[in-house]
Length: 231
Image 1 (spheres, helix red, strand yellow):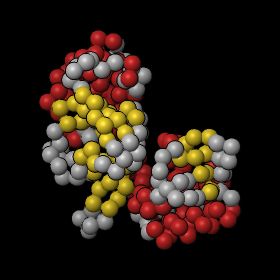
Image 2: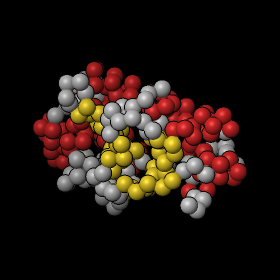
Image 3: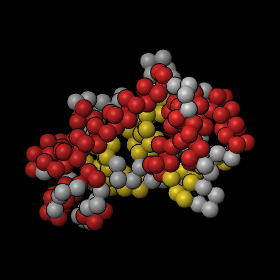
């Protein structure tokens, strides 16, 4: 198999501080993986034998709770490393990663991890930084769900999506991948009915425009002010 072009990863956060030879070494054990829309890259509870880097597309990571409820943990965007279960000393994938759109990733065997981080400390530091940021985000979301009313939680979730995947248009900022109100409900610990009611009220106020699996934020500042409002 031909060597993967290092220009695909050179500017990504996971590889900051790594030179051309180091990048080539990292890529020597990688292979491309295409994930058609709707397909699972891995499933919750599956043995974790590989780790991944998303090059193109978008993935939704979900988890089924002991009570049988599905929770959207996060969305994976281009440049994100994911499925790094061995970095948290897990032998299984703690969630399911599903392609929201046709996606392309790079895949490494877990057996490559120890050698890569020993030869390239920058990779280990960058990965630790990424995992630390995800942990902080998870803690913030847990705090929001335990202390804030539903509207404020939903506003926080939408603004995070704007920061992660917002694309400016003439009408406002479009979240640049298909996302449903059910997804928002599963991100915020609320119900589809509640999210639909909140979005309908926001549409009347001109804060957002909805649609099937589409969110357009017309007034980001207005949403931000909702997050600052006292409960």
